[in-house]
Length: 367
Image (cartoon, rainbow, N blue to C red; front, side):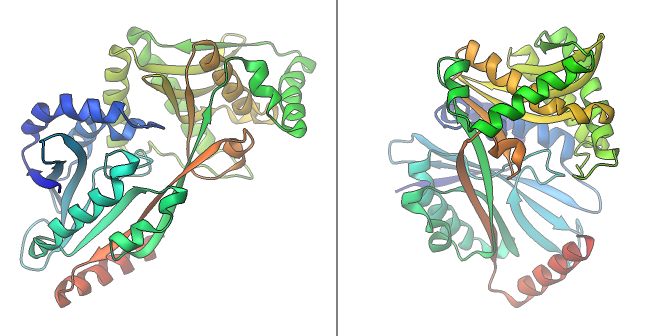
């Protein structure tokens, strides 16, 4: 049996942090979004207290021996902040413009079904506090393929894939496992630049003193990629001020802990492509990227990822995470995949169901 405790005061997160960090370190494949560091930085930069108000709701689940089994970092969002006619959404911290790629309960895979069932039952017992729960990050496995819908009455069911590479001991061994067309594509990436007389170098920024400047250049290139007139359109994830503040806040903290790696491709001394990496023990997570649009014809981001994989293998990393979403930039590497489920659990109260319908309709109109 699991017990559930609720934290509503962010100062109490400091007391939980050491246990939370140990739990986070036991997960695999890892992401940066499950750490107390990410959660605290997000809350500092994104929490709202105006027309919309976010109240902290971090649920802590322990077993009979008081061992920490799960953390569910959530918030109760009020729209509007006050008054009798409010819509109250209980959701996981990380509701932003995809700055947080994954959010949900933090626990080991084998504990996930029991954690979610226990937490859902606990929340139903306090259903007068919320109108609906937005569930995300319910990790699935082949053996537990449909457990999220059995554990929670989910509406508008969604799945988010996360792709990762178990790394061999050598780059040659990794390349040997790639299809012939991918090997040929890699050769063309390198040869096309050489043919046009462009030599490049790869720099990996990890010095905290250089992190700020490297992040600034990342933002310039990320924005440029989003503004480019290209066949595949990319979102400027950090277009909002709080997104940029968060990136510098979290990125600098990771750099000072020795866990930030920013991969840069330089041509004639100029950074033309970049991708952020976060070190998580013996794993590394490749986060967002950016590049000068005029260099896109050389597939510079494919080259940067290839160089990052080679670097990670050389450093002895066990896993390289390619991040979320299905696209050829990930699938070309023949990665393994983890699926995370989600959906909405509505309160049975008529007023709650009406509030959900109104907010849901508004979200759909905004696209």
